[in-house]
Image (cartoon, rainbow, N blue to C red; front, side, top):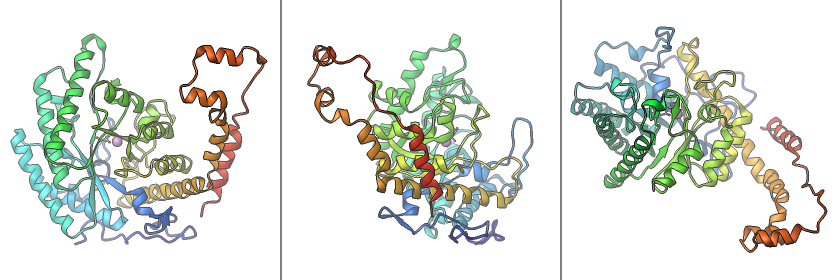
Length: 440
Ligand code: XUL
Ligand code: CO
């Protein structure tokens, strides 16, 4: 039954020439690209916390968004209404997945036992919707940042009681994610970090974080959860230094602590920017290590040093991102719009415009990336650029057949003024623009 979005049509593909702002110009869900439907390449998800729960508060202002599902005085009625809203919104938009934190969908009770009971009621309501809907859960997670007990971290809190509260919360969140058929479960180290080393036992905190993650992974196996466990890197915010800084950092951490086989990565574009990387850098690093599982699709603002979580519309970035996704053989989960409309975009229709623009931006990205791959332009260039490693001394290096002495012998009587071929960056940048400008 339509409750909140009655005034909106079902959003459909109308092609690039359509003037209808409530239609897709490029996202054509059933269109087959490289043997797979667009919707299956992309697996878009609506993020509950931004799209349903966010009312536009910021440190300087009150709620400004008129969200009819937030207007219920009874807290359970409101929780059910929020679920009704997410299903209705996804169905109208033609998005098949959503993501949530435990405390997005259900309020906390006075004891963890009570919180679990409340959560179960809401999860049952979700299950009811799922019986008659195509909408599914991409991944679930726990909110280990909002409550005051987590003010100094959760798994890395200085207080073991907090570690226990966090463990109980994640245990339950994993159970409900399994119950709802989630494709994955995300660990974002919300306050797992520090403000000052003066009061921080970094060694204990890092070891505790690893202990926590190991317990989580063991529990997932114990309950037969088949989804992917993922860590979502972020360098800072809310803490000054977050332990899950970036892909390289997290993968090193997994290796050091014997967790390599237990986790993959959920890469967020804006977190890459905060770490001083491009989005594609983070995706590439994850991909070449076989760890690219999912994406939080958003974008930051290069002029602002915080996590602005804007809807992704930069087609240059989405194209290079989808290139990494295709090279990776696809995502285990999908593209979650961890993105919010600006505070001044408070109409319900702004939620549609934002998602439509982002879905079209990734559809363009997918098309461009598929053509780049089909034509093999970048791959051919790389093959050529690194060709000296396919034979002669290069092959000996790669295959471990030569040492420093052999290499010295190889160069000793060669001319000193050797330099490799041009890197041709501008040529390649133009190639990418040509592909972007000819997308159909
Ligand atoms: C915070 C962030 C989170 C995670 C899930 O920056 O990205 O919302 O995606 O906890
Ligand atoms: Co995120």
